[in-house]
Image (cartoon, rainbow, N blue to C red; front, side, top):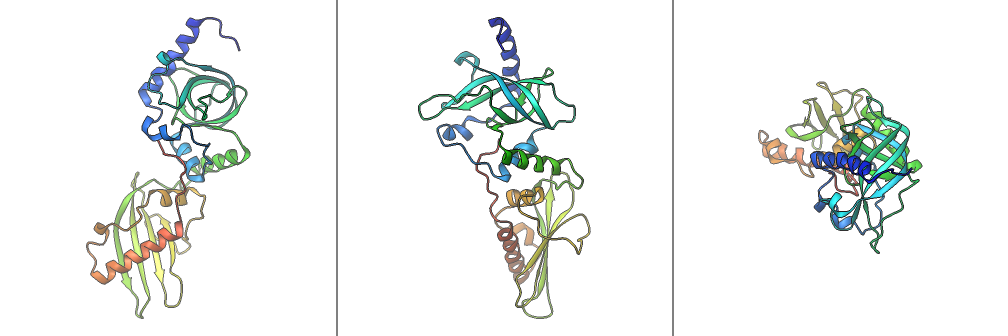
Length: 288
């Protein structure tokens, strides 16, 4: 696609620059050290971070990548080059109001060790964005919210979005409430229940049951009543992501303030069982 006049391009760029200024792509300090590093291999948590922040997720092919000069790319950190991207949409993965067949947005491409920008034209990419001021104009939710399309990335992102748009979506965890522990009638037996604080107030709780000679068993319940069928979440699911990436490493002291010393220590041990069972969150990028 040829751009007919310089003034036309300036108008288009100005609109996107306003969007970038209003919303912020991602802080320079968070990503400046990654500019000359090898491309990250995204984990489930990375895809989930981007997908949960983006009301519009799409697969697209870049048709034009116009490098912007310093005056048109304010705020771009060292090691990056800003491009005005034009692309055709191949498939919409998430977007309540649909999407234009052709789109435009700003993208800060990381430079290689020689200071060269990647070749972007004709690349198939996945973009995580929000709508702009005009139809077809988008704004990425993070500096690295354009990633190369691969079958693995495609299936991972679609799995996350499918859960986000499904029923009984796990809420975001924002803290830990009270913990309770009841000792059993024999040594080594007991049950701990820990209530979690969520962004939307939806009740979520952890239960850990200990029996002599057995490994402690834990489960997570979404709702007021602990379902007997509740189980530990499977790794690589939205519920696992919410817990593994949002829970603190240790049970806060405030959560056991009403418990006796012995019960408080038991609750802390049981919480450690949950953290061990979840495993590492596995982020390889810094969320915006």
